[in-house]
Image 1 (cartoon, one colour):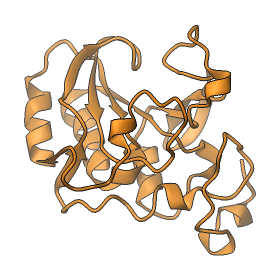
Image 2 (cartoon, rainbow, N blue to C red; image 1 turned 90 degrees about the vertical axis):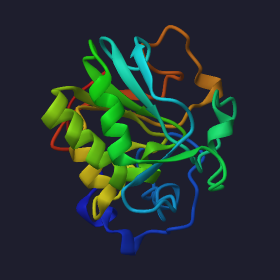
Image 3 (cartoon, helix red, strand yellow; image 1 turned 60 degrees about the vertical axis):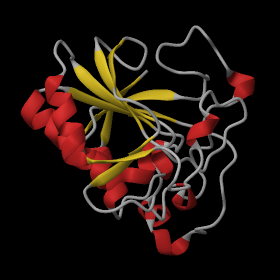
Length: 202
C-alpha cells in the first residue's frame, strides 16, 4: 500500500499515463479524471446488458459493458469501447438500467466491464448500491487501473468501497494466460474487498 503522502493527488503528476501494471508508481489520475462526460443520472454503455455470464465472476451474473477507456492496451478484446465520442455507444438512464436489472432472474451478482468502468463512477456507484440493497447481489468490477494507484480523494474511491471484488490492472499481452480464472494476463489480480480495503487476493 502506498504511504499516505503518496496518495495526495496534489503531490503527483496528473498527466503521466502509466504503461504497465506497476503497483508503486504515481496515482493513475489521468486514466479516471476527468470522468466521462455524461449527464447526471445517465450512463454510457458499449453494449447490451448481458445475463447468465459465467466468465466474469462467480455464479450466473449480469454484466454491464461501459463505454470509454484511456488505457488502450495492445491486444485488447474490446477496442471499440475506447472512444469517448458521445455518438458512440448508448446513453441510458440509470433508472432504466435498474428497471432492466429487476427483470433478471437467477443471477447471483453483477460485473462491470468495459471499456473502463472507473470513468463512470457516479452512475456505477448508484447501480452498485441498488444491486446490493434491492437485489441482494454481489458486485464485481474490472479496471485497467492498479488498486494501489487509484486516487482516494473522490468518487473513484466511493465506488471502490461499494465493491465486493475488483479485478485490477491493464491487460499485458506478453503476460497473457488462458488458464487464469476471470482474467486475461498474469499481472491482473482478483481483489476481494470490504469497504474498499483488500481482504484477500487471487
